[in-house]
Image 1 (cartoon, rainbow, N blue to C red):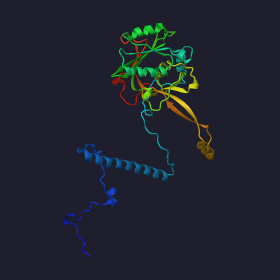
Image 2: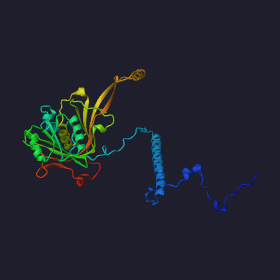
Image 3: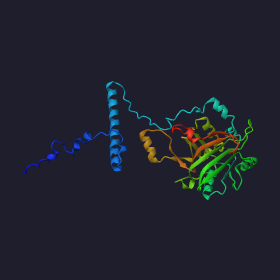
Image 4: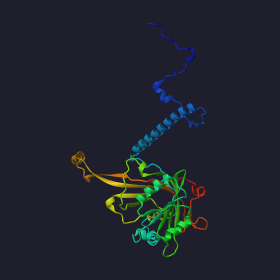
Length: 353
């Protein structure tokens, strides 16, 4: 046998570099986030190791807490904690109210929109556009006409919004919708209530929404076709006084004697002050023999049908910019609420609707 090769004198007294069995234990601890490293490749490598060590430290700390709790005879809670989100950590809004609040119910029973919610008056809406609209805006209007009953389109021509309000009010229209656009994409919606309230003899209110993410029905995969049935209405997560008012303004453009045979639902879902507008049809499919046999074997009860949703369209998002008393008047009108970004959006956890 040959003589064993000796290590180089320069390596004597030093530990070998390739110690795979104890590499994890001897890897240098990263004391801080390596974002200060200028070299991009080195920084990326060190940051990956930093995240791994951070995850391992959390796991060790969790196991240590559980072990200490067991030694003290305490019950170890295995349930997964609820993740922190902007919704469950939102700042308390002083105007938050419950939908069952007697004062709120009394106010809503006698406001401008009470005749529509009690079905004593049917809404009749006029919709128009900015002057010289693009062709793409008419596809969106066509979808809105299928979604909202009693929606009538009139071309804008060169009339001002004040003149259109006067024209619509004289012809017994209850609401006016004006769509604006930029670069052939709808980016704004003005909604004005034209009927005068019995107590104040003043029409309104008028709201302006920024519109985004418009997707017409033809661009939604596997979309269904709307029928002439009056849809059900779902107003969700409007919690403040302002939110209740906006929800009722949006809900007043729909009749409230839904025809359930059509199985169509229009939803206005408020999340972080963005109002997501969707229309669906709920479908009941009878379960096949395989599913029925499985239920019998497992002795599980339940309906003999599967329920699913089919989106009808259109799909778009609204965000409130201002709310004004009376009909449209940007010069002399009194504003109930204006979104002032620099003053109001001081934190991401503060919402107004």
